Image (cartoon, rainbow, N blue to C red):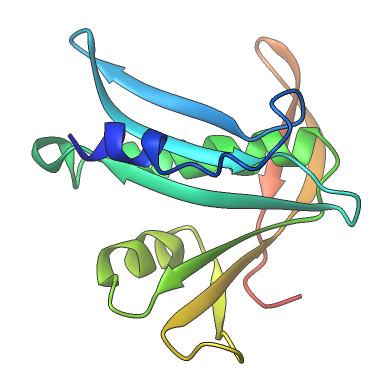
Length: 142
């Protein structure tokens, strides 16, 4: 399963107390999606290491929901942006980022990849359940 592969491929060079974090999408007692990320580094950046959704559960919003939750979590942790590196052949991941309004620039060191960067602007809004952070992601690069 692709989601399990994402978890296995997560970086293992981090101090386990400081990251990375992982969110799982679970349906019918099965892991159908996973995203591995860092909340916020000293420079105010969150980082998505990998995102995967089970083949039979794609195109129903699981990947978008996972990435949006990471944007929300990173905003609450004080990040000003979240970035990820996407292979230029990974059209599906590019589409997911574009649906979220996240722009990209080519990686100047390796033309095989794009850098996708979501600038985060947090606002505190009150809804029926009380105060909650919402994320505005104005399209554009940092």
